[in-house]
Length: 282
Image 1 (tube, rainbow, N blue to C red):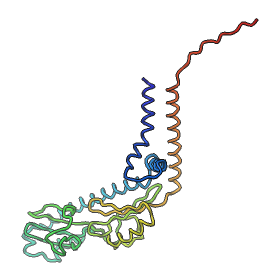
Image 2 (image 1 turned 120 degrees about the horizontal axis):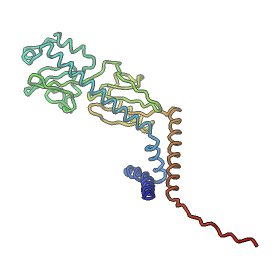
Image 3 (image 1 turned 90 degrees about the vertical axis):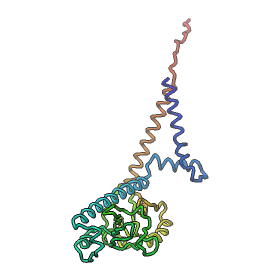
Image 4 (image 1 turned 30 degrees about the horizontal axis):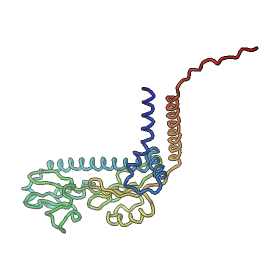
């Protein structure tokens, strides 16, 4: 029974590389052995760029959601504090009112738009990049992705935009350093760890430059997460990365040798040797 278990584990060990290769069916490979080594490097040796991509994606989503949640709370508090109602807005709201001054103090508030079934009740900030039909205030592009909340029979939409030159988070990783650039849905730069980049850089301009970056640096990626457009540019490996890679390599070799020893011992049967017949000395 014990021998069968070891034999089953041995088969599983042989089939694991095949399962890794089957996950790469979308890739065309002329050399299966090269493809196997490539897959083994990514899976067993933990590609650092892939780990950074997962970490960056996770932290950007968490940070963005936290900012949206906090700004929503601040806006609701400000509306109640200044007793803002439809009737007040309908009668006319001065641009120098206390509530408008309060909105200007919100550092990461890019714009606010209050709408109901009849149309726009109040607008603050530049919403021109969100209008689907030109500069109309009646229809917002990607309305489901724009943060909003219901207030006084209408819906208040808002979007975030960092103050010029403000980059709230910075990532440092052991091993590879990946540069990232996250732009909001209205096209402004939201997060980055490249402080040499002009904070006023727009999404359209950076997208054009990214085509050249992708050709120069293989592995550069572009993807959409919620209301963020994120660009990733992999960095160069540091010496510490090769140290960890060497340790992982030793661990894999040791595991393989130990597994081979267990399999060998499981298939080794004890032999009962009878004592040899000795020829009597004459």
